[in-house]
Image (cartoon, rainbow, N blue to C red; front, side, top):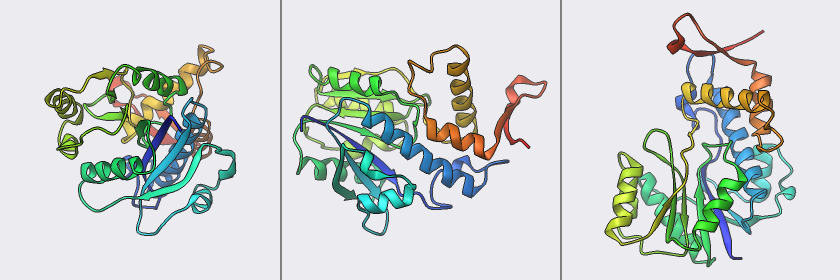
Length: 254
């Protein structure tokens, strides 16, 4: 294997995932369903990219294997031919400490380019992942900035010295990460921005992006997050815009 994606995620549990989405029309159960659909769509996008292998790092009290994951997500896991049977169970500690541990653990079993993705961007495109892989030929690291100072993707050309890496995830992650790369003299390529879907406003943005892609006829060029689209339709989630254009919100239609 020359390249892999590590999906760093929580196992979907009601009241445990996507809690910041819960507001107004969106219930705990809706957020749980959206979390599942996000993971499936991320898996689909990665499966259709040029990476050789998909690893999972899961935050859960119980050990999860590929069969368990298929049951949890209600999907036929066998179609994900790149999915490794190796699942990493996240350690205790801060988010950064758990991620650092996951990277080191995967690199004990793998050598090559490693891209880390969360489950928050179901609309990430395979060509964005491929671009990161290509840039790792010339750069030590690739980073995908979120819209609010966060990070949606980190790519490693190889296992690097991770001294103080976990501290990058306290506060404004993107700024701390770039300062960390400079401190260690690592070369880094910056990808275009992409939103994480964490809040109702983020979900409004995703729905608007999906509908725009359909209207302008680029759906044949863009890999849409079809599981999330189907769920949004099933939940009858709609955007309404009052007279004040700044007060958009999500409602459940009839």
